Structure formats: C-alpha cells, structure tokens
Image (tube, rainbow, N blue to C red):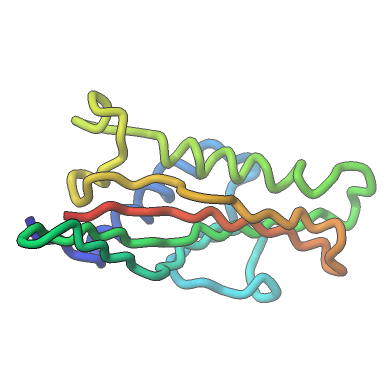
Amino acid sequence: MSFSREAIFNALFTQLTTYVPPLISPTVATMSRRLVLAEGSPNPSIYLREMDELYEEPGRGLPPKRILRADIIIYSRIPNTDGTNPGGYYLNPLIDAVEAAMQTYTGSDIINNVLTLGGLCYRCWISGAVIKETGEIDADLQGIAVMPVSILVP
C-alpha cells in the first residue's frame, strides 16, 4: 500500500478545520498549514507544521515501519483588559478542541476507535508531551501550546 505525504497532511488539516471551529467561541482567527510566528499571527490561531519522519526496519524482508510527525501549534493571547484570568483560561479550551477533533472518528474509524484520516494511514494520534507556555510571563501576554502528532503509515 503506497501513501502520499501531501494527501495525509492535507487530510489531517481538514480534520482540524472541520472539527475544531465548532468547539471554540469566539472562533479561531486563523488555521493554516503554513506557520507564522506569534508576533505576526492573529489570535487565537492554530497551525499544522510538518516535522521529521521515523523509519524503523522491523526485520529482513519486511517493509519498514514509517511514522510521520507533525506539530499542532496553538497561539492564544491574554487580553490586556483581563487582569484576573490566567493564560490557561484562554489556551486550554483550544487544546481541548484540538484533542476532541483528533478523537472524532467517521466511517470505519468509529468501529475501530482510531483516526485513519479516511484510510490514508493506519493511525493518527497526539503523541508525547504537550508543551505549554500560558503567556503570563511573556511581555505581549502571548501563550503557545505545541501538540505533537504521530501518523503511522503503510
């Protein structure tokens, strides 16, 4: 079974753009596959950034195990008018929405309880530590979360 990296990352982005916005109020200002640094980005915003790939050779004569990796980067700024709520008050709902979108299954994925991006991959999931800076110590009150994603491909 062959695969297309572009089709997989496009399907992952579609998963996010389809299922995240209905969960957020007010809505996300920007969602993109092209990362913009926080200073130039509207808030809140979500970006999908392709990262490294991992190849594991399972044994002689067997196909390699391939894992594509990506980061979902979330920006959320604490409003200057809010002197009460912590940065997590603004960042955590965005993280929750991304997590929920990654666990929204359709078709045969419902039966298997796994995200396959329409059958383009064996499995797509949030993997590893989510890095958070809630914004309280940033001069611009800019918060960021980085959610690592792994995609097991044929």
